[in-house]
Length: 420
Figure (tube, rainbow, N blue to C red):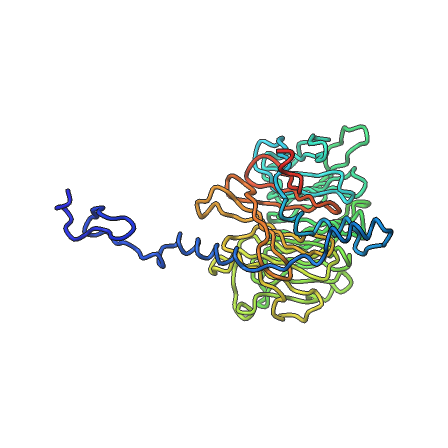
């Protein structure tokens, strides 16, 4: 057999293996798998910032009656030891297909999930059991479900373009949902407004942005998103500023992250606009992406999934920065990040769920970055099918909920190893 391919033997690592004459051995620098592995090592080995809080000292100070700001509980949530010990606490089974989004109620007692199976489940996540399950009146994939303050009203969005409102009776039963709005395109995200408990913002691939007040259920069109050439921009993401309910941000099928003010919306112009510095003057299309405000609304994150660009980074800007200013931070990633969030009372950490499915990887990871140091401090496997679709942070506790193509909801906490 060795005579069949004379002079075509590998050396060094794998020796004495005969190869056909037309076989080409790529050097490691040209091998995409090796490139990704090297990039992964580089990103994961970046130094990180140490926590500015000494939990032991803070605990002693609290016992002596000193008033800490932020509180001891808040400091513990972002301490190095807590972040290092975050692990899987529980899996909440209940859906029969992938889970698209999660949302903690404003009190943190309830967790709402929606799925490709068209069901919405309200969880008592601490008891690891369902509080309520109902089938939506949507016909295809339910993209988001938000529970409003008070816990009796749920608003859902869908690829069918519908925005629906479901009122839940205290007795546990519920009425049929009400159609609030019909977009002429898929709706990926909706947003509640922090200082208006009955107001919902919606945006869809038809480029239109609406506000709906559940008290009168009459949608008000805010604007149609267009680019500098006057062409409609399909919208993928919308979020109200939690620190200023008059502001909201949208992202769509171009590279621009736009912030609007409800009081100035008639001008049709954003309050500010940001994008990566090297993409300011070009037209770049992107797949569905995501943008979120920090807890106090002073910062904003965006992740991309460009169609013609290899940029997989996550960018952070101060919301007070001038338009088209360079980002304050760039978080290097080697995978697309379809879902992102802030973690911590002062948003000390950045969370991202990755899409690894296209690379043939079996586990979609959840990354924790140090916001200031830009280094990865924690990575956990978030989805066995390779796509993490949602990472939701509890409003007060060091708890993270995640979901993806797997048909369960995962709860992560520093006590994870003790429960699993």
